[in-house]
Amino acid sequence: MRHTTLGDRRVSALCLGAMQFGSTTDPDTSLALLDRFVDAGGTFIDTADCYQFWVDGGQGHESETLLGRWRRERGVTDEVVIATKLGAQPTVSETGEKAPEGLSARAVATAAERSRRRLGMDTLDVLYAHCEDPRTPIEETMGAFAELVSQGAVGELGMSNHHTWRLERARAATATHGWPRPRVLQYRYSYLQPRAGVPLLAGGHMHVTPDLLDFVRAEAKDGREHTLVVYTSLLSGAYTRPDRPLEYAYDHPGTSARLAVLDEVAGETGATRNQVVLAWLMDHDPAIVPLVGVSSLAQLDEALEATDLRLSTEQHARLTAVH
Ligand SMILES: NC(=O)c1ccc[n+]([C@@H]2O[C@H](COP(=O)([O-])OP(=O)(O)OC[C@H]3O[C@@H](n4cnc5c(N)ncnc54)[C@H](OP(=O)(O)O)[C@@H]3O)[C@@H](O)[C@H]2O)c1
Image (cartoon, rainbow, N blue to C red; front, side, top):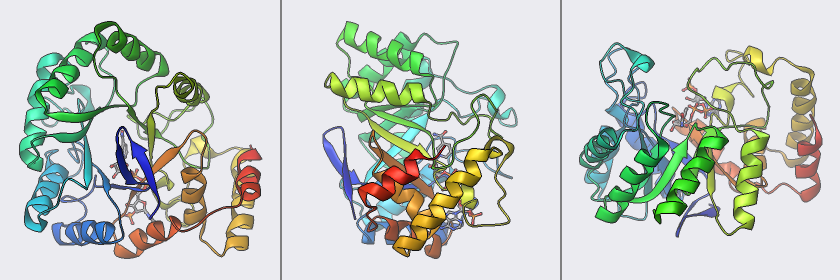
């Protein structure tokens, strides 16, 4: 297993997404996937307090509850870092994404407490703001986050699905007040790129932009490192599965050009398309931690094997150069 840094901690360079665990992936399979991931050296797991409210019968706490059970039953130690998110859980069931709890100081304090209880963790390893809350000034959210850190309720802070200008506004607020800054960022990203400005089918997804990458690089130069985690890294299986066609945003000439080079490199390395994509992400500049969502041991094993795949500098550059 390769490793990377997250704040002051060392975590696996591959993060396991637990979004479907306990709901669309049944509890036994979910527990088996978690066990296998940790046996293979995986130490970074991703969830949220709203997974998966949108599926039939879903309430939104199934994933955290399953992870809490797994931690308890297996006696999981602090070595396994669990990141969760708040802000996107609906206030009223059935309203879906229309009325999220948001990021007010009150919502943050209440949701963090619920997550700690469900996960059975005194200190949440990583807590992200899941998505923007335009009704709440970012200073209020950062102040509430700082309070959680000072209470020992949270270790690292993160932001997901926020425009870069809001990240900068959050950074400025934390610098002004001497609060801890969010050091973990989470966005959608993969090897294939959607056309800029074309809406993604998943309305809540925010894609990595050149602007965001520039922000992360510039911040690092000033001594403020981030860990950039990316979701939907395997495009829900679309790299290899005919039953998962790419959505409209990926319908442009750059897609076929990139797939051709992807196949070239897969042929040279003897790896699968998915593995080359994950290896390309793990050697990205700036550094990236890919999140994978899996529903079977075979899918998990394919992703785990990618952590042993090292692309040559030339192969990585060849993949990157195609647009
Ligand atoms: N911050 C956010 O807003 C946000 C948004 C989305 C996701 N996430 C996080 O990111 C994680 C992953 O997200 P995602 O589910 O969108 O990502 P993904 O990894 O692109 O897609 C996961 C799905 O792809 C298929 N798949 C995975 N590995 C495969 C393989 N080797 N071969 C063929 N098919 C394969 C499986 O579909 P089947 O199960 O149908 O076989 C799997 O459920 C989530 O669990 C969650 O933690 C965060």
